[in-house]
Length: 113
Image (tube, rainbow, N blue to C red; front, side):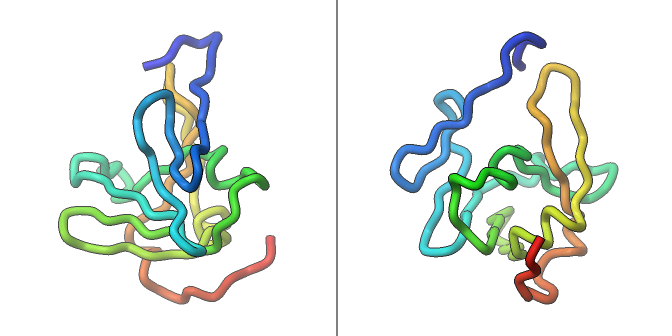
């Protein structure tokens, strides 16, 4: 958890993204690759979340997002995650955007935002 006064800092080291000292993801070719556990699924919406700054940062260059969860791969585009995802801001945590698992592995067309 984080205090209300300081928002956690996302750090890019090479192609690896860190939140504080925790590895969040890695950009491989044109894909943001994320490994999660089944317990990380937001059960109320059957969705996975991602720090909204990672999705909206112009400094990070990727088109696709792949979540590896419990021996399954969920793939979508960055534009789809932004346009069809919903934002939640839990107390003492960073703003996150969530995308239902039902929206993954569908049309991987890239949409200009």
